[in-house]
Amino acid sequence: MVTKTEESELKNLEIQVDNGGGGAWEYLSLVRKLKVRRSDKVLKHGLSILNDSKLRSKLGADEWTLYEQVAVAAMDCQCLDVAQDCTKALRKRFSESKRVGRLEAMLLEAKGSWEEAEKAYSSLLEDNPLDQIIHKRRVAMAKAQGNISGAIEWLNKYLEIFMADHDAWRELAEIYTSLQMYKQAAFCYEEVILAQPTVPLYHLAYADVLYTIGGLENVQTAKKYYASTIDLTGGKNTRALFGICLCTSAIAQLTKGKNKEDKEGSQLQSLAAKALERDYKQRAPDKLPQLTTALKSLTLSS
Amino acid sequence: MAEDLVLDTAIRDWVLIPLSVVMVLIGVLRHIVSKLLRSSQTPDIKIVREGQVMLRARNLRAAANFIPSKAFRARKLYYCNEENGLLFVPKGQATNPQAQMFSDPNMAMDMMKKNLSMIIPQTLTFAWVNFFFSGFVAAKIPFPLTQRFRSMLQNGIDLSTVDVSYVSSRSWYFLNLFGLRGLFSLILGEENAVDDTQRMMQMGGGFGFDPSKGLSVEKDNLDITQHDWALPNFEHHAEDVLKRVIS
Image 1 (cartoon, each protein chain N blue to C red):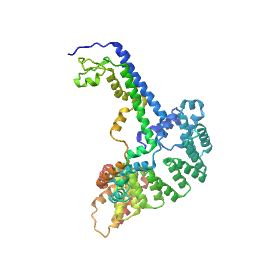
Image 2 (image 1 turned 135 degrees about the horizontal axis):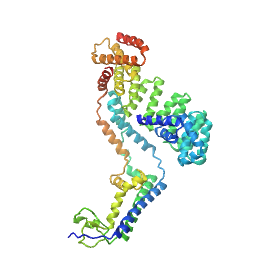
Image 3 (image 1 turned 180 degrees about the vertical axis):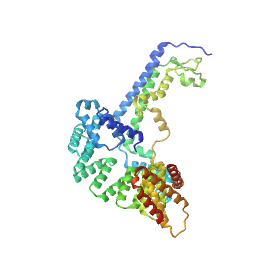
Image 4 (image 1 turned 135 degrees about the vertical axis):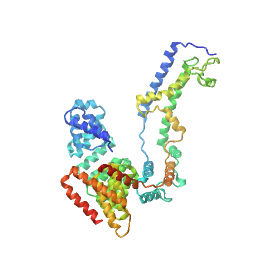
């Protein structure tokens, strides 16, 4: 994850480069280091460097890294002729390179010729079965073609080998959620939380999935995870606040027959409701009446 | 008897400085040569997988308190199951890294290359120092030493009355050997091939990466881990946070 300082540095560089100041190469290097997706800017500024032969020769050996970066950005923006030119230049320079082979396969994928790209990827993987990027491209291709079950299959195979890759677990969780396979999604989110326990985003997603699965135990657990999200974000996450209210009313409904002491819960709910009202007053005052009626209906139904 | 020997400044000019310069140059040369000779290591898929399993198990241990106890127990069973758990390595099959290293020709070649690149320059330089720079006092160590160091530091000097602080150039060579590591990490960057002392320590402590032992260690650690669900505390914290937000 990108830290705040890095993010602000990136923004500053971006503004500087956009307004005509220098520093395009630093911006591109930072984008490459942080692995953020700014394809249109990368394309614009990268091309400006590459087309100017003076600047290009100043880069020296880094020129080829720039070619690769611009090629990928061009593919992302669907400027396939730019991508093809860059790939050709790289192929001329490095004729026996697996990295360039990978770029060419990505170009085939960008063009939409799925079978050829699939063949290229499989042959590359035979030579080097541990190339993570190619595995992920295969999953992305399956997803782009709409073959979700194929994507799941490839992703599972990838995770059998590289099981510590939390981004892949997250992707799998999102795919499962889109297919409504919530139990599997919950498992994947647990893996992600294990890898990065202090990121509130994952607690929130996990709580959502648990709440959707339903059942008293799951809803109680979901409430706890909404609470942890609130804790980790300092109370600013509106979705978590709503989650608490919904969970409390759901728990109350599910335990209507049994006499459960829920003093703590109601305190949390009332606190969450107050925080929500305050938030709405500050940011969206015209929606406040809707909020109050919704909250009232939640507490009434409990 | 502590007499003050006055050492010729020519010694400093023609022994100490050239020796240091030569060692720096040899180090740089070795670094460049090792970069050229480095063969690309294709890691074995099994080793990568085992490494990842260990990482995942370690994550589980570290963040066990963040997932519900049912999930934790399910995962613990998955890892430590006697029959097909991920971390369970049957006794006979434990891949002995030493045997693996010697049977795999690539690895053996790599080890040999690394050893050679370390030993040969050291031996040659040492022989050169002994041949050219022996038989005289090279430097004086600023702090007093006991007599036991005489044989180590005063090798070429056959006078038993000379103070032990006056050392031969062999000790200057050793001083440089260990001291220039800092200089090399400045010049050549962190991972340079001249880090002999690091490698010597590694060789002394056994063969580095040890997959089979690692797995069983992880399994034992995981067996011990208790689950103490931290989430209820978070509920309390959340209440406090919200109280602060509202107020």
